[in-house]
Amino acid sequence: MSRPERVLQGTPTNPMNRTVAPGTTLPAVPSHPAPGYGRNLLWAGLLLLVAGMCVLPAGPSFNPGRPFQYLLAISIYLPALVIGFARPARWLEFARRPLMPALLALFGWALLSLAWSNARRPADEFLRLLSVLLFLFAVVQGLGNDLRRQRGLLLSGAAVLAATAVAAMVQFALHSSNDDRLIGFGVMANANLIGAAMGAGILWLWPWRFETTGQRLLKWLAMALMATCLLLTYSRSAWIALFTAVFVLLAVRRSERAWQRLVLLLAVALGVAIAAYPELTERGLSFRPQIFEYAIGLIAQHPWLGWGLGASFTIPVEAGTGMFQVHTHNLFTQVAVELGLPGLLLWLAIWLGLGWRAWHFRQEPIGRVILGLWLFASVMVQFDLPHLIDSPRPGWLILWLPLALSLLLPSVVTKRSSAS
Image 1 (cartoon, one colour):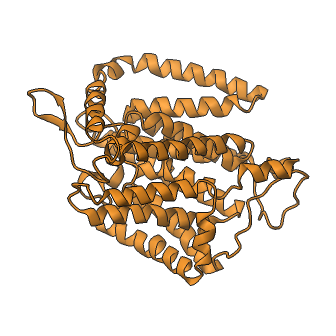
Image 2: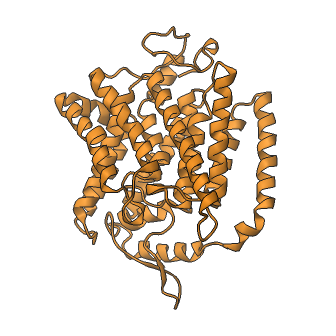
Image 3: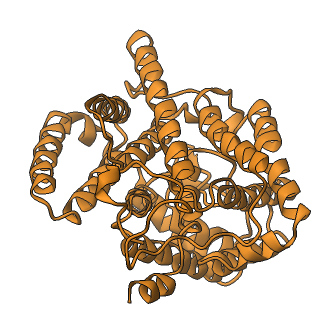
């Protein structure tokens, strides 16, 4: 795919109707697209997923509460199943999209691992796996190759997150938490979780260009609100992740304005690091080295099969204190503990493949959204958000959403063939 025509100023039209410059590659049109009302329902459901994360009450451990789960079942899962089984060929077409064969292999291995997992509720683990698969299918069917729908969902989701940032900052000003770190609501009532969501929202907005000064001001205002909210979380992993993503996105543009913004970014980052140095160093390394060492030991106990999807285990973080963790604080070691080396290798192949595809489509706004989210997640999951196959939480916005968006793009081979 090549960049939309400059005269459009980043405002998309339907890819089926617009004039395409020579060498441009558009996503393959689905052979069996969902009916219009089905696409609209899924689009609304995807937006409700973001809104539900922001406002609906959560259960234990920041998992989605029942109202949120029921809402997603009605607006995403059930419609996706109906659309899929109404024409089974849609499932086959979905399975043939780039990266899907490897994803299906990972899902199959995870499902098989339930046979030896000590998970307290294996049925819940199966439902989490199914919800991720239906989410990917819903994005493909609900957005398709329509750039207007893709852009509209990302901008609407970012607007919801910006409004949430305002509410969270007001709450923080009136009732600060015990550790003086901003938290959100529902499944985002944790500094790292809302930090991940705010980083995602900024990157959803970043690549898009707008025609009018008012629209551009709104874009920068929304990003400033989310950036301030992220800053107040004091989530070091989210800070470093966002800096890395924006740095690379600016560097790949290679324009004079991009280089000016790059210098500004470095100056701001240096200023924030100096101002927040006492608070950042006070927490030390938060036992991450000890947790990593113990996680390697867990992997060594069951290197090939893993402990199984959703396996229950504890990691003592300081001997004699009774402090422990129930996850590894690192996505890759968590995958290795649960799914063994086969699961880790499959996930690495998928994640590196996603980064490769994002790089090849970096000249497209959607490609830059995917690249930004991929960079952000690649850094943040080294320290936080360790669960891959999980209930709908902010981790979905930086892990499964970029994978879902990549399914809307053609294969790199197709892109090269069209360009030649």
